[in-house]
Image (cartoon, rainbow, N blue to C red; front, side):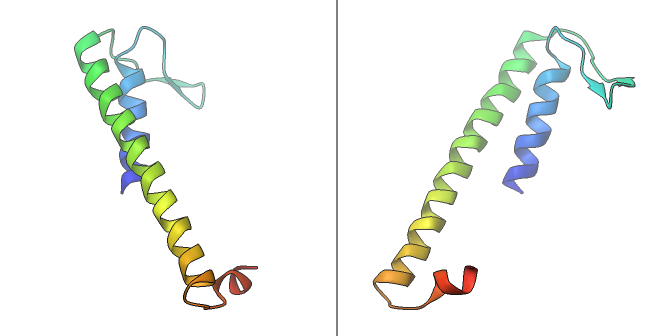
Length: 79
């Protein structure tokens, strides 16, 4: 869900920017320049990216905890 939010907010940020946003180089979906809407979607995109980075870090740390503290062979199963 967080990845979808990042994609959608990134696309909508581009839609309200000065440059054209084309789908596969064929369909132009640019609405027009709107600085306030662009800033809102930019903020959503930035917050979602930070949350995603935090969740990835927690996930990696949890895997390392299970491997080295709990002595469960999780990393071996991944490879």
